[in-house]
Figure 1: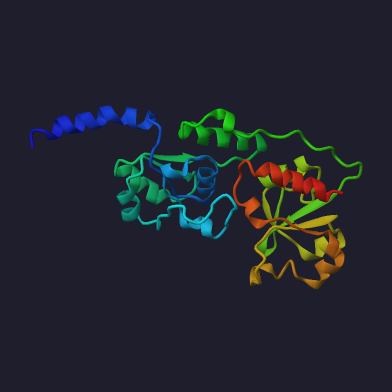
Figure 2: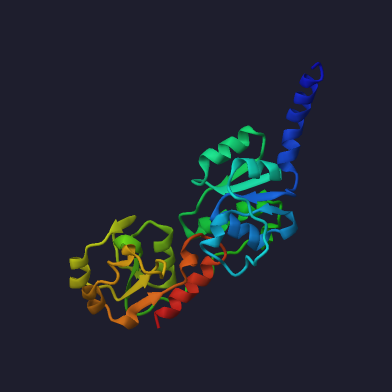
Length: 256
């Protein structure tokens, strides 16, 4: 018993060193950190990605990456020296992990393109990786002579308005956001039919579901011709990162 105070003091002294040491056992609780870890980190240093990446598979996560089941006991048994997550993800779980002495870092999600760059840089700093690996915002493509309004349509008749990262992506690529109000909005079919956008980007899963019925309404299909319904890979809208610049290029190509 007399050795406990000394051990506790030693642990306190080691905490700053542990936080500054290069992580050797990395674990992710979040889809977006899954993607960044697999994109930048050495696979040998990863002890677990979340199960979420099965829902939105990306080409740089090949089969065989280590996974965890999301349970506190399993994660603690893996003894990660760094747990990464997004600012809004798994808040109770990460608090429990912190109380057990594990290092947990929550990355704030970006709201602008410039913040996407800083988001990636913060990730690299946390893993002690070179900042030169971070991507940068590419030069803005040339804007078309004629304004073209694009509606980013999601499931359940939800459209993406201004003051969002998605809107900035649309605007930077050369489109004008059809919705002028900020934030995510429930759409009105009558308004869309009477004043249709130049194009609709269907940014929702392709499977048949009640959530897709608004997009399948005959009146909307008649107001916007089939060739003006654009389809982007759904995963590209789930998380920001270096793949965001490819999305901008894809959107710009559709202007032609």
